[in-house]
Length: 366
Image 1 (spheres, rainbow, N blue to C red):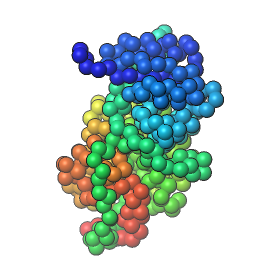
Image 2 (image 1 turned 90 degrees about the vertical axis):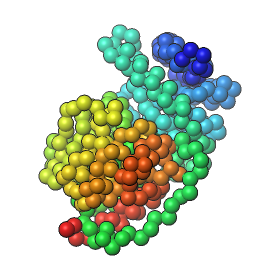
Image 3 (image 1 turned 180 degrees about the vertical axis):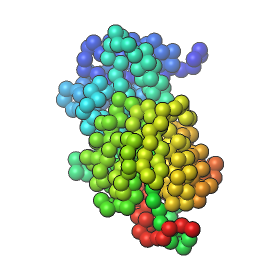
Image 4 (image 1 turned 60 degrees about the vertical axis):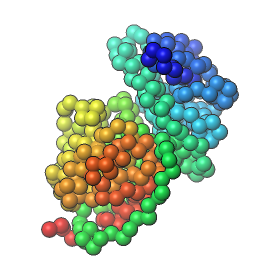
C-alpha cells in the first residue's frame, strides 16, 4: 500500500472500550486509517457530512437513533458504504433490516483481544471494510413501507443499464414441469431475496434452496429473519427431505447439495473462496434435476455461482441472472452472462413474476 491513499473509516460505536479496540484494529491494517469515531447515531450523521469517509463501521445498538435508522438516513442524505458490525448474533432484526435498507455487509465484532479467534475476526472486518469501500453507492430513493425502507438504494452499477422487458416464454419452456429452484446471492443479497420471496405465494410448488454469503455466526439469525419478512417458511438446510413451498438456507461453513429425495450438507474446501458455495449448489441441481431445475444468480462480488449456473444451463435448466440495473454488485451475475450460463437477465422486481410463469403449468420434460 506504499504511496496509495488509505481507506478512511468512520467508526460508529457507543462503547469506549470497543471504540479503542476498533481504532486499534483499523490502525494495524496498512490499507485503512481511522477518519473518526462517533458515539451515537446523531453524531455519526453529522460526522459523515463533514468527514466524507470512504466507509462506515456501524454498531447497531446505539443511544438515540439505532443503526437501522442511521442506515436509512445515510442512504437518503449522504450515501456511503456501510458495514454493520454486530456482537449479538441472537437478535439480528436490526442488522438485517439495515442490510435491507442499504448496508452492504454484516460482520462479527472482534470483541476482545483475549478471544482465541481475535486475529481472524479482526482480519475479516478489515477485509470487508476494504472491499465494501470500493462499492459505488447511490442515493436511496425509496419511501418507508410498513415501517421498512424500500430496498435497493446501494448499487455498484457504473453506467445506467437499459432494463429488459421479459419476453414471452417459448412454448417448449412453458410446457416444462420444474421441480427445484436454487438461488445464490452475496453483497446486496438480503434485500434482493426479500423482494424476490415476497413475490412468491405460500403455495409455491417447488422447494427453494438458497446460498447467501454471510458470516457463519449470522446464518441462523438470517434464516429466521428471512422467514419473518417473507411468506414462505424458511429454515436452515439439513440432511433431510425437502418439501415444496419451503425455503432452505445453506448453513455456515457447509456446502449444500440438493437431489430429488432430499438435501445433503457437505464438508469440503471452499469453492470460489466460499463455503457454502453457489457453484456447488447449482452443479448439484444440474446433476440431479437437469432441465427440471431453475437457477437464479443475484447480486454479489466475485464469481461464485457463475460456473454452477453455466452447468445448469448446459443441462437444460432455466437460468436467470439479476440485471445490472438493480444489482448492488453485478460481478457474480455478470460473470455468468459472460460464460454463457444465463437464459435471461431480469431486474430483481421481475424475477418472482417470471418464476410464477415458469411453474404455473407444465408436464414432465422429455
